[in-house]
Length: 325
Image (cartoon, rainbow, N blue to C red; front, side, top):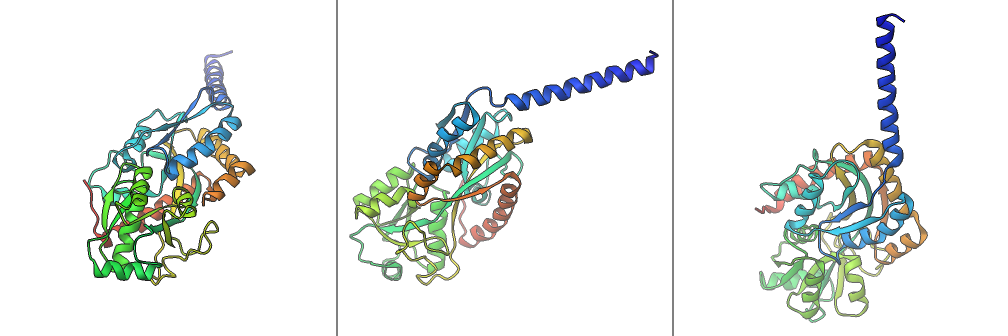
């Protein structure tokens, strides 16, 4: 064999080895537990979804999927932790559409949503619910708006924190209704609802999942949902648009993101596990009872949605003039 042929043979052997190694790596993923970061405290929509999905994903992938709550800075701490993690599929984050709002709210972010993540899947969406304390003298949206106009700035609303989708949704509501209900941010969903129940604040916009049990018990009064269509979980509750604010539409969707440059085959495997977990009858029934709507999107569809929502929220947040440092 001459030198040229020998070189060709050696190169071919090396390439075959690389290919085999890559295939082997893909085939063995995952070979250790996966960290599923929730960038908020327990009790909110992100946490409820992650904990509903993790057991079934563990079963499908053959490795434990461990939920890890890393709260703070409106979800930015947990998201940044994942953005800076090794892009191998073993650290992922559940993120709401807050990630498409934050670039227009914060003057500085530690990550770039369009560059620092590999979208894995959309999991679900959920209408948000505008609810008030039962002692508030308003039975519907029109009466609440009228009350707020007679007492500008004297009514308060709670949210899980500054810059959260709930915060943005209420500020859009304030803007569209021409009212001023004062924001009181909390560190998570649970304390924000506890103070609504206790009457320390008069209103909130929260997820169906976090408010449903309190609506059923009569401790809070639902007056409108944030999406154009009524929720099957609360079909008697009208939409904000039906209440007179035509065009109001602030849904809340949840996605899973991995660090940028995570191998595409690994992303695809996690995405397929999420899809199959969401189709599990027991998991699906549990989430439907809590007001979630299964709305799986694959990695490319999720990428397209993020791009679309970034453009939408750039305009909407400019309208309400909200900026946070």
